[in-house]
Each structure stands twice: as C-alpha cells, then as structure tokens.
Length: 214
Image (cartoon, rainbow, N blue to C red; front, side):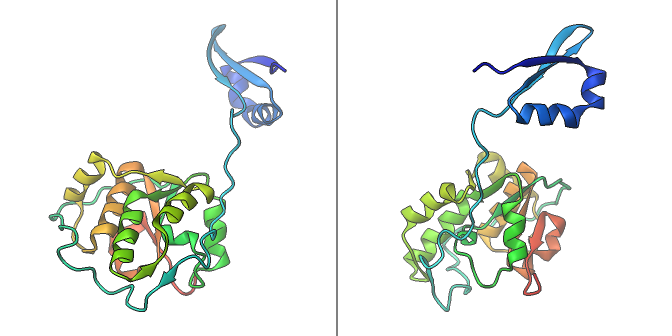
C-alpha cells in the first residue's frame, strides 16, 4: 500500500517536528516545502533498525593468561609523534571482545552499547585477534568471530587511508599499534572508543575507559 503524503512548510516542520516524526513512524511521508517548492521529504526507513545483541560469542572464545602481555615488537610498526584534534562522539567504536560478554563488564556498559544508535567494530580489532590466535593467546574461530559482528547488530569499520594518515597526528601516550589505529579511526569518523584500558586516559574523551567500578 502506498504511503500517504502530507505537505508542510518549513515553519510547520520546525514547530511540529516531533509530531511529524510520529506520523512517519506510522508509515506516512512528509514533504517539506520552501516557498511552495518541495525541498525535502521525511519517510519511514526501508529496512528495520538492527537490534544490538552483545554477548553472542559468550563461551566461544578462550583467553590465555598471558593475553595482556605485549605483542612481539616486529608485529606492527609504530607511528611518529603528532597532535590531537577535538571531535564529537555520536557513535561508539567497540572492541571485538564485546561479543564475548566478559564478566569484567557491567550491565550498565552493555546497556550503553544496546542503546547507542550505531556501534562499530574495527577491522583492526579482528586483525589483532587473528594475531593473538596465531600466538596461542586466544582459542577461537576467526570466521565465526567475523560473522558475529553482523549478528550482534554491529557495523564493520574498515581501516582506510585516511585512518592511517591520522596516525601521524597522534601523540605517543600509548604505543599499542592496534589501540592507536582505533584512536585514529575515532578522530576521523567522530566516534568514541569504548575500551577496558586505563593507559588510554591521556587521549581524553575520545576514549571511554572502562574501570572495575563500571
């Protein structure tokens, strides 16, 4: 059935925006006009918003006692010193481990993930996990881990040239190469990284550092 279209001017759109969104949620389309000419349209999404389901990998990954030990220095090269830049954070970038439902993380943190409009998992996180599997620090199926990114309602964030170039502007407060590429992605994409690592606090609010109290 074709959606019913309603036409409003810009003043009406500003004044009654909440009511218009409620109408859109019921399937109606709203055409916004300026001086009698249509300039924009509000309409329902063509596909449902995914339900975020962190914890689908619970019981599927075994973490070695030495997991937090430094990686071999030859694994990934380090970047040079640069400068930070301020960003805003409408979305979250989370580590792949949030699919495991770690007992270190509280229900409040999982609620934050579940109620964030868009949650990304970086390709760099899977890269790091594959290395950990090769070094026998993790026991898991990489293909299953990759599949669960989508199943959990997360969106994959590839590592781009822009992300790599942003490494040049980062100060060396923290030298882990994978954390640094996450930080570079956060600055470029204007997202906040959610991670359990107090060593990242010097980078400011772009990192939401999780503590035992959380």
